[in-house]
Image (tube, rainbow, N blue to C red):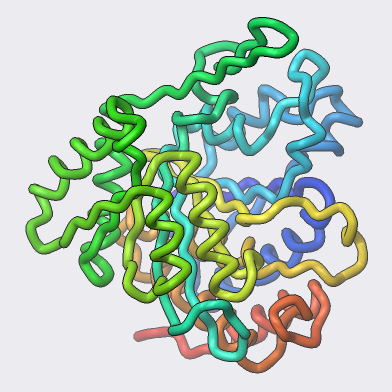
Length: 364
C-alpha cells in the first residue's frame, strides 16, 4: 500500500468513450491532488479491447496483482457486451475486479443539480447502496463457470445466490452511510415472492437496524418502490437492496436527476475500491469530444472519500467534496457537455472543473 499521506491509483481508460472521459477525470484528480496536497500517484495501464489486441486477454493476471497493491482503481467504461467467451480472452473487466477484489458495495448517489432539467417534481438527493457480489448475476455466483444452464436448446435455468453474510455487510454499509446523512434507510425487496432469499435479506437489514436506533428503517417491495421513487424521490435518503434491483433502481434514479451521465458510482470492499461510471462505453460517439465525463469524475470523488474514511483524512475528504462542488458549479454555469444543458466538449469540461479546483481555497 501507499504511504499514509499519498494514494496510488491504477487508471484503466477502457473502451469507446473511456479514454476521453478518463483523460478528463485524470486532469481533475491531478488538480485536486495539487490543491489539497494529496500526493496522488496515477499509474495508467490497459484492459478491454486494447489489452485483448496486444495480449490476447482483456485482463492480464499480473494486472490484478498490480491493482491489489494499489490504493484504488479508476476503471473507464468497458464494452462488456463484446466479451462473451472467456476461453478466448474475453473477460468482463468490471465483473472481474468486482469479484476478485470482493467489492461488495456499489454506492450510487443520485441528486438534482441547479441548471439541469430533471424529471422529478422536487429536487432530491439520495444514494442507492447495491449488493454487488451475488444475486441474479450469472458471472459472479459460482467459484467457476456461470449460474445459467441451458438444459435443452429451449430451456434455460438461472440460479440466484443469496447469503446471510453478504446481506449483513451491505445492510451495515447502508446504515453507516445513513448516519452521515438524514438517518433513513429504505430496504427494497421482493420477499412476497422470493420468500427465502429476500426474506433473509430483510432479516439482516432488521438486525443491523437494531444497532442503529437513530436510523429509521422503511421496507418497500421493488415494484411499489419504482412507483414511489418516480413519484417522489425526495422522500428517500439511503436505499439498500440486492444486486439486480439495485442496478435497475440506480439507473432510474440517475435518469430522474437529469441524466445517467450525472450518476457517480464506487464499488467498495473492505480493502479495495474501484471508481466506475454508471454508464457504458457508448462506441457510437467515441472520439467526437461530446461524451459526458461527469459520471466518472464524480465516481473518482467517491473513491477519494472512501480512502478518506479508511485513513481518517480530512484532506482526502475535503478534496472529494471540492470535486463535487466544482461539478455542481460547472453544470450550473453551462460549462459541461450538451446532454446536461452545457456548451462544452469532453476535454473542455474536464479542464474547466480542474481550473475551478485550482482556484478554490484550501480549508485551514
